[in-house]
Length: 60
Picture 1: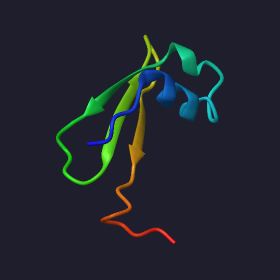
Picture 2: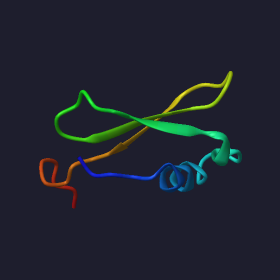
Picture 3: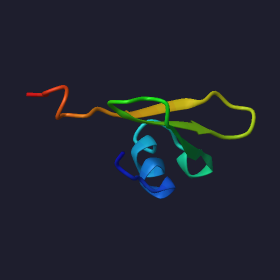
């Protein structure tokens, strides 16, 4: 599983929401192929970020 810092994930989600620095991301570890994280902050919807494993799913 590839490792990502909370700051790196906040930088990714900042492309979509304004208050990305307030989100905390935790890995969802029960998957076998992709790297997935759940992002949340108090009283807001959760976000799911997923890194697709390009070794398994070839993307052109």
